[in-house]
Length: 259
Image 1 (cartoon, rainbow, N blue to C red):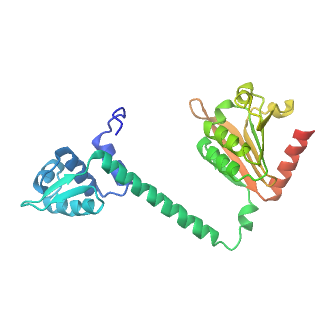
Image 2 (tube, helix red, strand yellow):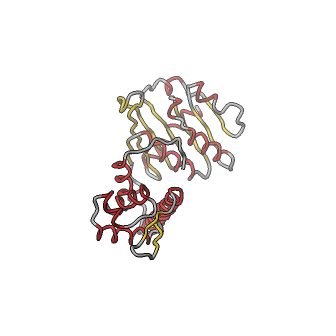
């Protein structure tokens, strides 16, 4: 493990183990075993304030997870696997669980009779991280073109820059609109991306956050509000796909761009 990481308190570690699906007793016993090394249930009970019967019950679950070794002695000896191996096992389980959830949600979503109700609505997202994730996903779904507008260079994340370049490397036309020279300079010399400075009346909208057109049916538009944290403005985005709102907004923006 990386020795440069700050060491967490035991209560923080116990809380983390709880979030990873460990019961309170299992979490305490696991930490106690790593503190003692190869040891007996009596010693674990002594350092964890967990009763000996509860220790035996906990180590049974930990053994099933592959996190400890058991020596059939009298009394039994319990030894945790190394911290690196523990972390690897937990990460593998965590990734498998996420994949299982994602696959199931994708399957049940595919069973919906119709997406018409969803596609006709306008959706709201709040928070810069959530907006950035939605932008990334929409860009990845583009098949013909992407128009991305941003005035504040802090809203052009490295991930968005990367996915725009990856998208432009395919058959998708990518246009970046910005009145910020710092934003435009990030794409200087990139022949696969067209960069334009918007017309004056577009760049004067100080509360404009980010604007995204994908193909000819999907639009996202965000606005900035008061600071959520020092130096971090609150961002709210509205997006729609395949709706009358999206078609009207896209036609309006296209008219301004090509005027």
